[in-house]
Structures are given as C-alpha cells and as structure tokens.
Image (tube, rainbow over all chains, first blue to last red; front, side):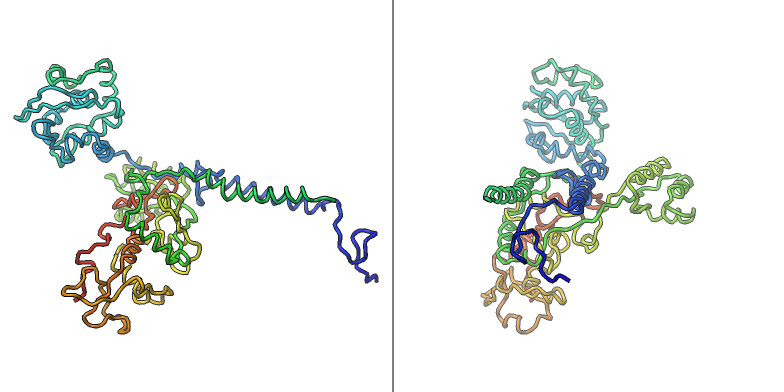
Amino acid sequence: MNSEPKSISEGVGAGEPSATRGPVPVWLMLLVFFLIYGGMLAFDLSGGWFDKDVYAPFTSKVELVDSQPVTSHNPMETGFRVYHKPTCVACHQADGKGTPGQFPSLVKSEWIDEQEPGRIIRIVLNGLTGELKFNGQTFNGTMVPWKDVLNDEEIADVLTFVRQNKEWGNNAPAVAPERVAAVREKIKDKATPFTPDELMKLSPAD
Amino acid sequence: MNYGPLVFLGAFFALAASWFGFVLTPQLQVGRLEQTTNLVSKALYPAGRPGLARQGLEVYRANGCAYCHSQQVGQTGTSFDVRLTEAGTNQTKMVAALVKIGAATSEAAARDLIAKVPVAVRVAVPKAVADADVKALKAAGAQAAVWIVPFGPDLARGWGRRRTVAEDFLFDSAALAGTQRVGPDLADVGSRLPDVNWHLNHLFYPQQAVKGSLMPPSRFLFETRRIERVASPDALVLPADLPARLAPPAGYEVVPRPEAIALVAYLTSLRADAPIFVAPFSAVGAPPADTNAPAAGSVPTNAPPTNAPAK
C-alpha cells in the first residue's frame, strides 16, 4: 500500500539512508558464535597448534612422532660416521692402514681382533703413548684421549665398526655401550694416556 | 560525532592483525629453521645446492619458470601398511598368523603371500592395527615392519615421494615455490628426470620431448655456431626427427649457453625424496638422497658420452 521508501529513523528525509545505533540481531550473534566455535574446533583438531614441524596430513606432534618409520640401529653405519667425524680417520686414514712408524694399522691387527675389547676401549678413552711393536713393525706416535669427545654409544659403535669391518679383514665381537661405560668408570681417575706396557699387564677381559 | 579515533584504531588493528599473521607468526614458526636429518642415512638435509645450481636458480627466476611450474607437492594423508620382509622358517605358524590378522582369507592365499615376500600384507590400516599385526607376525618368526606410505593426487602422479616442506627451500635465497601449474610440478624433477641432455633438448624444443607440451621453447639459451676444426663436447645431441627449420645448417652445431647449463644443473638438483622427521616415509632399496645435489651421473660435464656430438 505504502510505496514510500521506509526510512530507518524518523526525522530524516524519506529515502535518505542514515546510520544509527541499534541492537545487534540475535541471528547475527548466533552466526558469529558458531563461526568462531567452528574455527576453534577446526584449529584444535587439525591445526597442530602452530608447531613448525606439523604439516598438513598430520594434525598434531603426537601423530607425527607416531608416524616415524622404525629405523634399526646399525653400528656399522653409525660407527662409520663416528670414524669419519673426523676422529680416527685423521691418523688411521680412511682405509684404516694408518701411517708407517707413527700410527698403527687397524687392518688385520691382533690388537683389534682380541675377543675381549678391554684394551682397545682403554686406548680410545685415554689415548696411547710410547713405543708399540706389533705386526713386526715399530710405531712411536701418540694417540689423543677421546673420553671427553665421544660418548659411550659412539665409542662402542666406532669400535664395532672397526672390529667387524669385513673390508679390513677384521671379525671380532661387537662392543656394547655398557662395556665402555664400565671401563670408563674403572679408569676415571687416570689422567694420562696408557702405555703399551700398562695395557699388556691388564687382562683384556678386565 | 568524531569517528576519527575509531577509524584510526580500526585501521591500526586491521594492519596489525595482518602483520602478525603474515609476518610475525611465520617468522616465529620457521624463521630459525635449521638443517634436519635424513631418517634413513642420518645425514644432514638439505645439503645445499652446488654453485652451478645456485646460478641456475637465478636463471629459473629470471625467466619466470615459477609462473607456470610449482615446486610444492601436496599430500592428502599417510597410510600405514604392514610389510612382510622375511617369512621365517615355520610356514604353518606363518600361514596361521597371516589368516589371523586378516591379511589372507584362506590358507592358500596366505601361502601365495609368503611366496611373494617382501610384500605388503596389509594396506592402509590404522596405526594401532598395523603395530598389533607386526607384533603378531614377529611372534610367528617373521620379519615385518610398519610401512609408512604418503599418498595423494600429486604423489600418485609420480611428482614426489612425500609432501614439500619448508626445509626443502632452506638454502634457496628465493623460494620459488610457484602458485600455478600450467606445467607439471618440479619439486622432485631431479630424481624423476636426471638426464641432463633430455633437459637441454626439452628447453630447446619442448614439443619434441613431451608431445602436446604448452611450454614455450627457450632457444635463446642456446647458440648455433660454426664447427671450428672439432665439434664442441657440449654440443646438443639433437634428435633425428627434429623439424628441419630448427636443425642447424651443415657444419654448424647447437651449443647451450652457460645459462642453459646452469638452469639444467638447478633442475636436476630439485629433489625432495629424503625422508625427514616432518615428512616421514619408509624407504626400501637404495637409500634416498640425503642431499638436493644432482643425482649421480647427471652433473653437467664437458666430457662425452652424454653431451657428445651426434655424428
């Protein structure tokens, strides 16, 4: 009936829009509420809480950690990396043959191939100094101690790598980290490198 | 009424919110990103691109390759498979275990599975189920593992082995991730197309290498020059059925400019096939690259045979 444009507020010219303050409609408040709720829910369920490690198919750090492939511990691989850190490789060389007269060879060595690793664990931990005769050669070099540089697992891995290296013709039992820890505890008060004579007096099983 | 302060505050908070969202939050998230470790080889990832590939990145950028090629592979989900790698010695027990976990409907089917080892005996099961199945198989004397397989349309096309993550761009001064896919995604092109000569030919005449390709040729990256005494070892090995209008005249050869060599070095360095913590997957066979250096044998070289003249 009334074709006049409806004015929003009174006292203003018909058809002229004007801004007023009025109550926010309930439906709009509800809509905004549900949008915010939905957004929070989606963020909580799949947002990963802004963790830089959590990418799209994963929804949380827990799920990501749970999805890691099981990698078996292979001392030949980890030991290789310790050997080339560079630690041993600097003197004993990548081929394990050392330097004549200074650094003994680790290839087919009777010191390496001992069934019990007590002596070589001590050598790696505290170092070695003095004249050394083996495989018919004389060596007079100094090996630095590694006990402050390498931990028990690293020493065990690198010794296992050397002792079981088929390319070097070695085949001795693996070295367990617990064994290294036990020897480390026994010689914790010794500050100087071992000498060959000291080592030969010891039982390799000690 | 004076709405000035209100308008100011509105504008301020609108800009501040976008600054927080687009600048500050990403900076806090990945601003201090460091190298991560390859899950298989334990080497650091990424290892950084070789110098030539770094120059190639600039060529890629300057020629706008990123407008038609993305470098981001998506992943819809991760599926857990149960992979039997060794069936063990007790076949009766093994068959019973396979039937029990639902890998085979009958004993005959279980025997078929054992014959095909290594094989995925269960595909796309929940993680808990996969763990339980592996336990059951190991109890029967088998070697089995939960196999993590990312999946999604991009991966089904062979564009990568996992999704692209921020680490992949760690050493790129411009992360050329791209937004459009007029051409295929290049995030992992170095491992699917490691052949340098293929890339050079493709840049010279894309439609020869890929039928129906929309890619414009980049022949300005090559020069046709007269063969002086001996042919250049870098000269392009052109296919025999190259259109006559593109073939160099007799006594001439097509040689890639340094830009083309660098661009191809960059393309072959694009590899995203290392399993890392943020994008894990299980790998079999040769360990995936722990580097985004070019695949072995794909380093551009002056030497024959890869770039040897065709005659």
